[in-house]
Amino acid sequence: MVAELMFKAEKAWYEGGFICVQLTDKRQIKFPVELNKNLREAPVEKVKNIELICNGTGLHWPDLNEDLTVTGIMEGRFGQSA
Image (cartoon, rainbow, N blue to C red):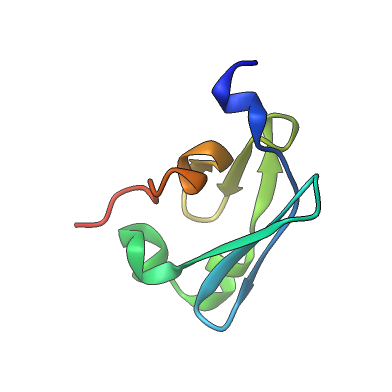
């Protein structure tokens, strides 16, 4: 199976400084917003606006033009950090 399709989200939300993701197998993962420059610098209301894209294999913040793959998050890649 293609790695990008191995992990799919069914839900994503912001909670207490973290992006939380529930996978289709019911596991939950999270990472601190501080690890992503665009999320870190954005108002909380914009960070909270998360959409699932690409059949649950990606997260999208429409107000911030930011996208992350679920596989990337699982591998410790959280987007731009500088």
